[in-house]
Image (tube, rainbow, N blue to C red; front, top):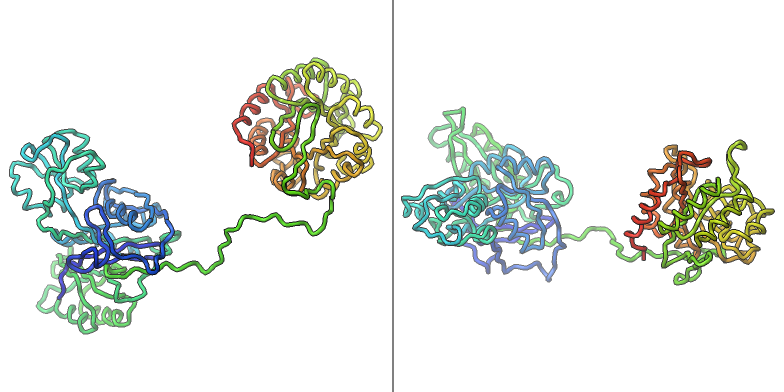
Length: 631
């Protein structure tokens, strides 16, 4: 029967592609194997094909610097796979991490050429019914490590994993005065020795652990035999999802291996009958190890690795016959053997479009003056000495309505001091209720003009009727068409005959096309200086006053050359939610903001719930400075 120890290694890509090593003593020219923390290979994928970098979480026993971690590091270096390591305290913790979905794959040792079967590894895989993927074989090149200045003669304690201590029994026998201290992991041994700084303490671990924890190598090649290989099993959860689900088995079943545990009665010929069944069906048993079966003193359990895939008809027949002569049988799983050749990752059967998004050309020009014809041309509207358009971001602030001379002058000073560039204020107010405050009328216009002269800020105020247009245009720098008048076409035409810039608010139930059509009415009368304003639209949502349609900003920037600003105050209607909407508006490409500011919002005669305090306004303007203008 072949040797119970088979050398080799496998590296998996997303579909389980592998690298191989020959049995017994692998060499670089024959495939891939892990030597210490290095991976050596003379193989490459056919035709120079490469596998895209993948990032997966891999669970292993121990901490960084352990041999299991070295296997993952070496695989990552060789195959371009990025493993995010997840160290675990025990074999069961590794399995639990994979089973629960905290890790995509896991790695457990199952066999060592010197110490023999690592039964806890097999038992854990069997207990959790995990989906085995591949075996990986690593050459364990143990080093005796110590802190700088330590010597072998001065050591009184050596820490390492119990299996590693067993693998170095002959070397340790030459140090009879040194106490052997088993610890959970070689990485922990190296870390603790480094942390202690005690020259009388040493650790047996890898050269990678020495580098990682700043230790020196006191002795090399200390294992009982130079061909000291450990077999690991890479696995995933049953019914795995995500990247781990895309591993695929080797297509050739001769490159597969199956691990199982079976129990037989403690009687002459019982084991021989089992092995003859495998032989009769042409199956090679490459590993066999026994243990007493707890709770059944008349039975022995055997760990067996059989070359082949459990899905093969001959394997199915063999297991059926085997069950008739044994007490129990548990198939741990089938996986790619270390002899499996590399497999090419299959490209997905979908067309992947990496082309940048293309702006479609309109079927017809519906708004010849408002529509964007040249992608490189955008309009900038001058309001006094303030430019609104690409290359600048403006903040306009002021009360919903002008209430008194003291109120508007104080607000104008606060807006200017905080960095606002224009003063808003309503003199004529369209209100839902006829009994609500309607504004101060022409007195309010005069107070706005006074505030403008006092601070130098241009002013914006709403025009409600054709009769107001000429007189308002004489005093107001930016004429506002409110949401309720967006489709007052006679008013739009009258505004279009003036030379004053116009702030056109979107109607509360208007589409983007309807907003552009309203702008076209103004521009068709000869006034090209139109600024569009998104102020929220009415939806079924009641948590906010309106629903701010921020998606309208990039749509309008694509479809029109006109500047676009946002009024989050009217959109949300709640003071505490205005600041994040201001930041969002700038981030999506708005050219500015229209904000309501009041000295004392609690006493405001109009829309006090959405009015900012002077402090709020200062904070928002300062925060906006930290957000770059979009390209």
